Amino acid sequence: MSDALDYLVKTRPDAMTSYFKFLKETGKSLDPKTRMLITVITKIATQTEKGLRQYLPRALDAGATPNEILDAILHAFPALGLAKIVWAIDILIDMDIPEFRAENLGVENAGMKSGRQIRSLTARSPTATAMAAACSCTAPMASFRFTTAAARIRSPTSRISHWKVFV
Image 1: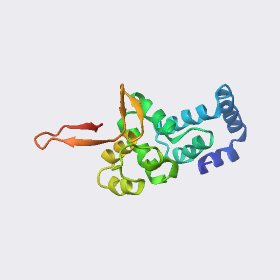
Image 2: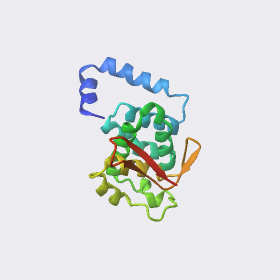
Image 3: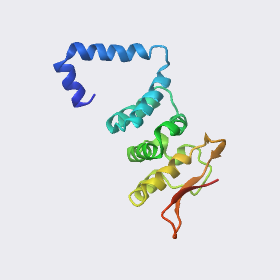
Image 4: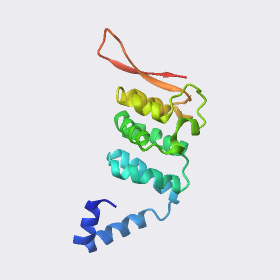
């Protein structure tokens, strides 16, 4: 728990007890894996880094596979937008959780960068490398299956950037 929540529990125990009871009650009809997937998405939506770092391993512990977590993140694309997904994938890469490494996800592209190689590239181009990592899993999205990588392409004569997905 964060220092802020610890503080609130100590200074407002009645309110926080009610709050935690509310959270527990609202999820009682959901299995633990589904609750954790939803929680991961809410941490991304609100860009709560500590919470995302806390709940990614919890989602794995609750039985979600890395591909299910990545699929849930990509499935929320219409609500989250690219910037929040890239933000989350940057954190995921930084956490270096073995289950999320490309070689452990059954990525078909033998040339895909490892987690450490992606992280070293992220400093130069976080958007392109994070999107490449996100699309490296086999995830249905817009009726396509992305199994390799994506790159941000900028025309030398234009200020407009677009994504090119290599399948």
